[in-house]
Length: 114
Length: 115
Image 1 (cartoon, rainbow over the protein chains, first blue to last red):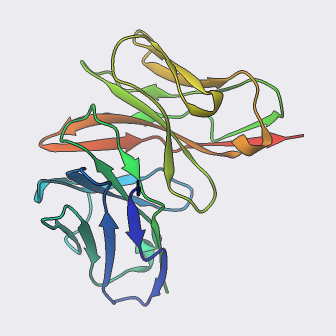
Image 2: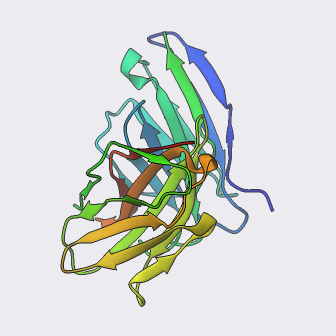
């Protein structure tokens, strides 16, 4: 069975540009979350979606947005990129809503802003 | 909101020696705890999790962790490490924050195994 897949794996963008990152959850998983991992730090929560509704967002500016599609895949969008947005962006899926369910992570998208 | 403290940023150890990676969390009524491993240029892989029940949790690759409610700790152990265990290890707590189900991670511990 396919795990959580993310695309692209790497990309380089210029300051001020926009980027879209994509995530396909494990088949049957209805929850998708996004995390930002800056080099040398633990991942930080950005968004969680369940059944196509935003359930929460972390302490990130409005330049960050996301959505979940009817097939439960998800996109993370970042506008007006800053150098500080350079990070590994991780997507995680979970079968249901709730803190007791396991989270499976994808391999991430490495974003470099120059 | 919960917080997680990983007391050691780096742990050097010789191959076949035992290792303990320490993790403390902030107190809560219910707590769900996880350990993840991250190999270079990869995502996070789940090692083990504590949801309820037995306080000793066994995971993959010979790792185990013990949940200690009185000390709010969830330390990760392995009796004999291998070179291939060299990686970054993250402790995390899962919680409901409003309507969001999310993980809060520690800052990570770099395990460096040498011959």
